[in-house]
Length: 386
Image (cartoon, rainbow, N blue to C red; front, side, top):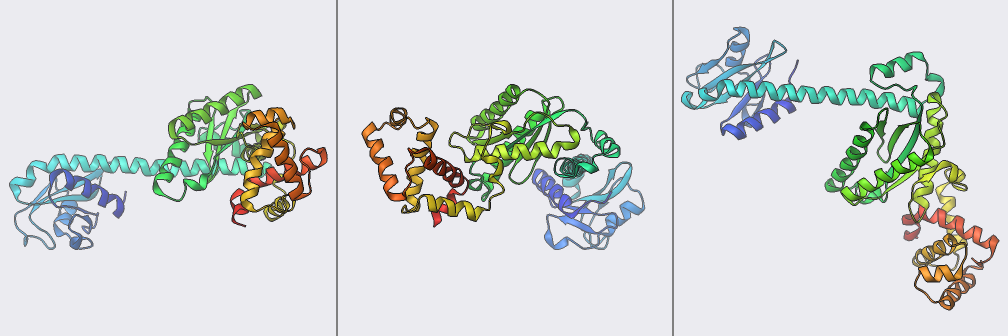
């Protein structure tokens, strides 16, 4: 095993902070790869070379001129998997450093073991993530017996019938541009991952903007309950709201990509909605083709429907219209929800008709406004800038 310079520096810094002495770490050639004395990094430590070549249990250096590139102190071999991989050295007077010798040696080996275990886990996680990417985003033609066996070696039985739930943090951009926000995102990821690990057969994966949960096949009711538990736990723990989309019933492990596409379309429907309640693929309508329409076309459509309105005015009309349509065009229910007199609501709707040329109370015009609301909710930030 070769000790990386970054890991070596972390270890010597941690140990030095405990014993309040200068600490050095040398590699298998006797070169100082980390030190609390920056000037010594990269220099040859003949004492360390002596420890390695002579297989010494320790080497106490009495003065600074005894070996090339050394200072008085104690040097001990670092053993990993029955192999000497380096030397740890403590600078100082004999009576000060000897008492720390074996303790520091063991501490270094434990820290090195822990660091190595973390690095191996990162490698395993990357292998697992690459496999899941191939399965969920790849071509169904590549899902063959060798691929199934590869999954088994990773502890993933892809043949188990599963459904797909896709989630994303609402207003993600508000959190991703600063360290504190990034920590919050990481905590949300860990929470959802933990919930999947607690689900027998559950699999979690993530992208930069999405959390993907592969859930053992179950009815819509159970999927809806799971979605609500995830959303509630994240909101309660971190004050963050999730948008969630759920596929239709399982179509087979080789077609998991189709399930993912359905869940993603349902997710976009959730993002575009006002209530942000989890959406099922089977319950969406116009959202089926929303992703096929260019962003610029959607923005232009919103401006045309709301012609005569400024971006600020559009942003004030959208909640009113959404409430109106959610209550099937009922003047009474809409006015009640908005704490507004019926006559005031009627006046506002008439004013919107005068501004745009479209009457939201007419069935054909209502369809235009509803589509514009969907497009607006997807591209709100861009539309507000124009």
